Amino acid sequence: MHMTKLSDLPLEVKAAIFGKPLVQNIDQIKTSVSEGFGSSPKAPYNEFSNASTLSDANNHFVSVNNDTLYSQVMMDLSAGPVVLEIPEIKNRYYVFQLVDAWTNNFGYLGQRTLGEKGGKFIFAQSDQMNDIPAEYSDYQVIKAPSQVIAVVGRIACTGEDDLVNVHALQKQLVVHGVNEKAEITGTPTVDTNDTDALLFWKKLRTYMQAYPVSESFKPIFEDIEKLIGLNDERNANDYFAALSEEAQQKLIDGEKQATKVIVDLLENSNARTENGWQEQFHVFDYNVDYFEFGALKGKEWEVGYAKTTEALEEASVLRNVAATAGLWGNNGYEALYFPTYVDGSGNQLDGNNVYELTFTELPPVDAFWSITMYDAENFFLVDNEINRYSIGDRTAGIKYEDDGSLKIQISAEKPEDTANWLPAPKGRFRPVLRAYLPQKAIFDETYKLPGINLK
Image (tube, rainbow, N blue to C red; front, side, top):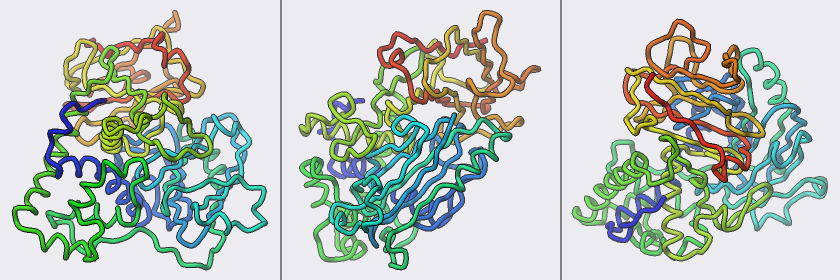
């Protein structure tokens, strides 16, 4: 995804585009700790939040999946290294994705990288390597890029009958700090309220002071740092209050315009499409600095690999697009996401119509695949009368044709036979096809996704 006129945008707009992922991520980490979200209960830093049920329409998290139970840790290393232990997990897909403050996926612990054996790990920042106790000498050391990181665990679950098995695995997960009695600092707070028109900018300034942009991106953030007074000794409220009304209004307008720019990119993506599906193989490949266990690096998996201004700016826009449409999404080598807003003929998908999706050949994966229904405005799961939010190769009772093909009906109207029905809202919708551990045939495009067509 490339934004050809990025250089023509006002600095305030670029700053909001580049900075939003940090703000959105830290805000979500705070929410996870203080409130939880959906089926994931709240949990303090350095404790697991284990979802007890699959996500449903009550889970207001962008593009959340309905395929796995989440087991998450908002990890805070301010008091020292933190231990994570994963048990043996056999005959099912799982992954623990490691995400830093700037949404970089810097590591993966799961089926692809560990097999069924699980493992023992200890997380430490670069200046904490000498603080790892000798008793953990046989643990795999993971270098954390930021003081606070999100460990986003997903364990595949086939449905209600499988919940008890996943719950048993969740109970075997272990996480704790090596200095459990030491007090952690958590994420920084902003002394204002939600009606503050400059709230985003105050958060951006405060969070960037706590979580500096990585070394490679510093050159393209110099003007942004000056714009928000990052090195000014005053607090955020005092700094922005001292700006002229004109300067404040430019910031307010800049944030609004940045949102419009990203929404336009999402809805009018120049990503390659196949029968309406957007082939976003590299939408989460904006990391160029941090590669720990399980994270792949190199030209193929780094949009900003060249580290030129143009490449780093493209990676920064991509970071925002990814955070807006699918915060905490995986790199393509772990899972691929194919969203679509249109049918096979290029017309906007609308639940008042009845559609059919026919697979003559199922998506080639080493784990499993699914199609999940979201509304087109917020990318939230859609409430429906049979409580089905996704459909795929693990859906109980799904029916195949005599020749092995698969036909899925997509509509708001309930059909007589619901075995192969994916419920849609009455209005615009955006489904996403997920391919977990995709095979080479998807990447080299020898496999073609069929279009969603009017029935």
